[in-house]
Length: 307
Image 1 (tube, rainbow, N blue to C red):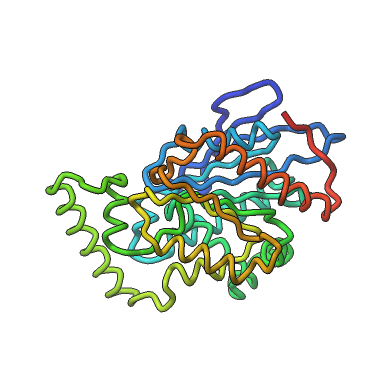
Image 2: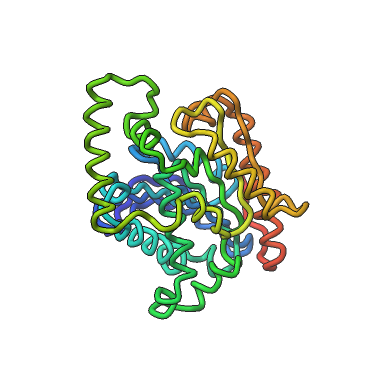
């Protein structure tokens, strides 16, 4: 169930199998009691990402003294015929944050949690995490105390959306499956398109066309303050994402800057850190200073040991 994969002085690194076929990597720092409990960053990998890909982003948080959890959902969950696999993963992550002895201290002590999804592969899971904590049926069969904390904004200090949400347009989904290539091999494109349209047909037959468009559903998400990182050069996105961000900013900001954007012109899908490392790192530091630190102060959580 839990196996040690590496150690580093005062860090405890281990894997937790929270769902079959789901890869989860946790980096937990055992902070001495007198320095307070460290905040927690939960990162959700993109479709096809590997652990080492997402680890580069986790290190940005760890260098600020955060504990981190990396969640990578498998292709079979993202493109399942139905939402149940995504719901199960979302529930498992919620329980990991709220109940796992190596992770839950940040949640229980109001230390501040940052959710950091990449592309739709990560955003789908965050979407279902929110949908679950506002679902009366889920709340009825769960510990209402921790679902209430998520629901009332007393758990998550901020959310960083990297290259998401992406509108659920077939041509964008096909391009994402092909690795973001705008002009892929024609045969590969044809095969992927055929499989994808068959998948969509089966999904609609069994579940109907979704009543709520994906972007409208994402617009309703309100875990807390949000930062959207996206680019004009992202071949997996179209203008709908920018319109979505601008609309959400106009609806929720009211001068408070609860919704922010980091809008690049020349970086590819989930490649903003590689193209603009300093601006990306500065944005994560700003999330900490603007959202996590005030969250901890409001919650009267003590300071923590930072690197």
